Image 1 (cartoon, rainbow, N blue to C red):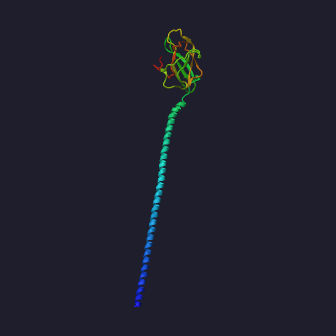
Image 2 (image 1 turned 60 degrees about the vertical axis):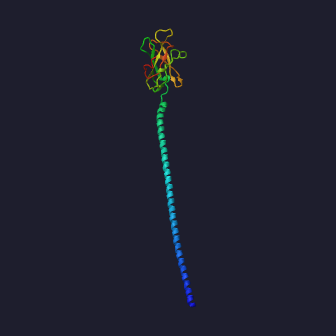
Image 3 (image 1 turned 120 degrees about the horizontal axis):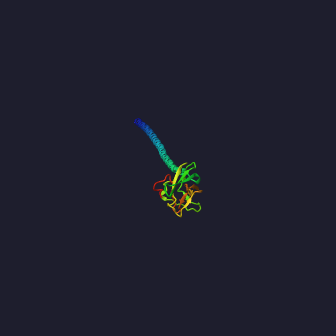
Length: 249
């Protein structure tokens, strides 16, 4: 009885040990599996994070590239604007250069040494008008400003001959070498008058941009001289050609 009971106890103990061993083995396997799963999950998570990071990096790179492109585009556009502006500038320069060129390249004012002036009686009896012809003899273009400053007598004491406003041209007269310009001048009202004086020559001065130019041109009167009434004398502006109406006074 004791021997059977001891055997039974030993058998039970052996079964318990075996059960515990199996449980321990099963637990270890499960733990390994769990560890493997956890490791796989971490690797997957890491890979995912790496992918996200890569994607993020790519996005950042793309964003940077995009910014660069945008910057490039913007820069390009700005560059384009600059070019356009440049064109505008060039066009402005060209137009301004044109206009400015015309201004800067505009011929300087004619000086008394640049111009020869002659006088011719109008085809009328008695003579009331003469036509002055100014010819550029300088060899380069010059601008004939305003009107002839005429003195029928000594320059210091002669009465200024006023200009007729309606004869003023729209733009200054630029004379190429050898080119002429004209001015109609009234010298009297016709007929003999006690205030008339006969002149054999007279002086014509020119304008500079700031006023009367230095020096004067001595003009010979037409053959026989001119009977001049200084109170009635008037002059027209210099023009390329005499115009009906505007130069008649």
